[in-house]
Image 1 (cartoon, rainbow, N blue to C red):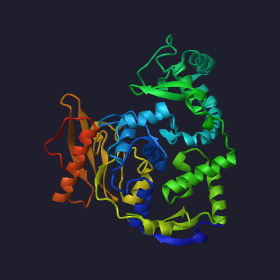
Image 2 (cartoon, rainbow, N blue to C red):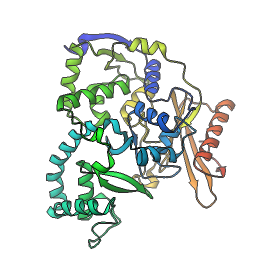
Image 3 (cartoon, one colour):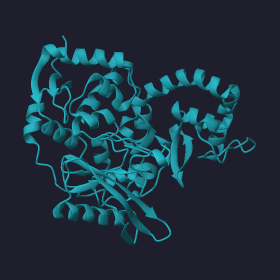
Length: 405
C-alpha cells in the first residue's frame, strides 16, 4: 500500500505551519510556569533540547526553553538534570537534553555506536584510546565523576577541535556514546561523567526494549511531535534508525490505518509534499487556536528549525549558520537569531551580550522580504528585546547605529 494510494487530505500551508508550531509549543503565548514538572512536561512535549557551546546571549538549550516560557531561568533546568535526574544528556542528531523516561530506547544507539565507532575511531585515533577504556572506568568507579582534566594528565593536550582529542578524551567520548558512562553534571559547561548506573534511575536503567519496540517508539514519538512527516523526516527526528526500518514501519502503520497520507502545501513556489499523519489530523487542525502575535527570538538550534529543509518548505525561511564562513563572505553575521511573529518567521537579528558594558547590543535586524516594520511590529520587537535583556542578565539594551536593515 503506497502513500499515494492513501491520499485523503490536502493541508494548506498556514494550517500546516500552525500544527507544526503547536507541536513545538510555539503557537501559544510564551507565559506560564517554567520549572519542576511543568518544565519537564514542556521538554517531553518537544522531545529534546539541543545543547551547544556558543554563548553570545545565552546557550542554545536555555534560549530554546526561554522562547517558550519566558519566566524560565537556567537554574530550573539544572535541578531536573543534576538533582531530580528526570532528564539526561545524550545524542539525538546532536548532543541534547532528553527526558530520562526515554533512556531505555537509547540502548539501541549505544549498541550501534559501539559497532561503528570501534572500527572508525581505531583508524582515526589508533588503538591507543582503547587501552584507556578500563583505566578510565576504574578511575571513575573509585573517584567519582571525572572530566577531561581529570584523566590522561600525562598526555599531550591540544586546544584544537575533535580531530585533536588525546587518547583519554577519545576514550571518555567513546564510553559516553556507548552508554557505559553518563553526564553527571557540567562545570563551566565542561562535562563531568559518572558510571551510568549512578546517574540514570534504576527504573529506566534496567528496561531494555527489543529492536522492534525501539523502532515503534522512535517512529511513533517522532510523528507525534512533528504532526506530519515523510519517512526521511521521521528517521531524522531522533537520528537513531536506518531509513529502511522506518520505511517498513510506515508501510505497516498505513496498512493498520494508524497513519494516513496527506498533501502539505509549501510556503513558496514549490511542489506539495506527501507526508504521513495521524488519522485525526483534520480534527487537530480545526481545534488549534489562532497563533499568538507575540514576537519571539529563537535559538538557531531550536527544534522547530533544526531541519533546515523543512523550515524552508513550511516558512520560506532559508537559514544557515555562518560561524564557519569567513567574515567577509557572511551574508548576515557570525550567529544571528531567527525572529518569529505569530506563525511566520519575519527576520533575523544579530544581538550579543557585551561583557564590558553588561548591555545587550543590537547590531542589526534584517526583515524577511515582504515584511514591513510598522510602528506596532517595531514596538513588539523592542519589547521582546527588553525581555531578552532581562533573561541574559544584562543591565541595559543598546541599539547600534543603523541596526535596522
